[in-house]
Image 1 (cartoon, helix red, strand yellow):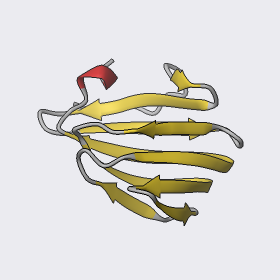
Image 2 (tube, rainbow, N blue to C red):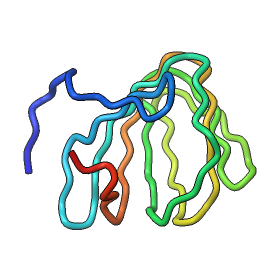
Image 3 (cartoon, helix red, strand yellow):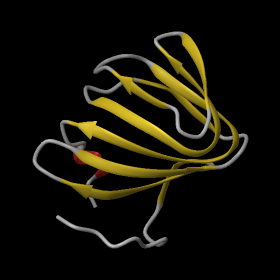
Image 4 (cartoon, one colour):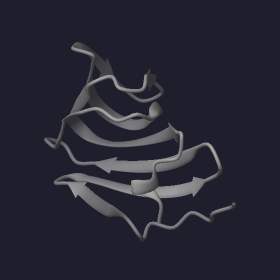
Length: 107
């Protein structure tokens, strides 16, 4: 699968957080998130491992009860089943990989 960059086609699962699946394969799925300052990603868990990279902005990530402040260039990996949430401190863009593929994120 190959995708050309396009700013269209974002969904807004949570107010202030837009997401777009970029590409996916048999075992992984790549998503771009655009997040607005002040948005809150509520606490949740899922069976997917989640690896992320912050391109721009600033967020507080709460992973398993521990808070990490992330800025441009920072990255993370959230194990399957671990509770996590986020506070968006500045307008931000992140890229995340999910494995296995999140069926609910397929276009």
